[in-house]
Figure 1: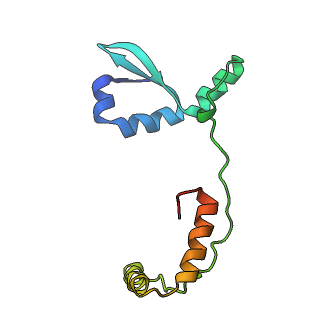
Figure 2: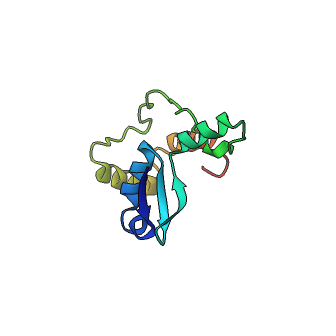
Length: 117
């Protein structure tokens, strides 16, 4: 097991976290082991072996596959995002595409909850 000091942890956090993903690492304080850092998967595995509960938030959820993105119903060319946003802003001021914008806002709210529209 690799050992790192508290100072190492402050200065090399990313490197130590990467090492902990491969195998547990000991963190020392004044030269003595104080804590152990390990991957969440390993923590869950050990808790399962010990028949102890694991906080639900630590269990990694399976990724959600949404499928292909729908076509842009407003018809803006998003190859140049800045130009598209400028055009959208001008159109919004002039009231262009109001029904489509309203439809998209309702779809967005249905997907992500109330207050999103």
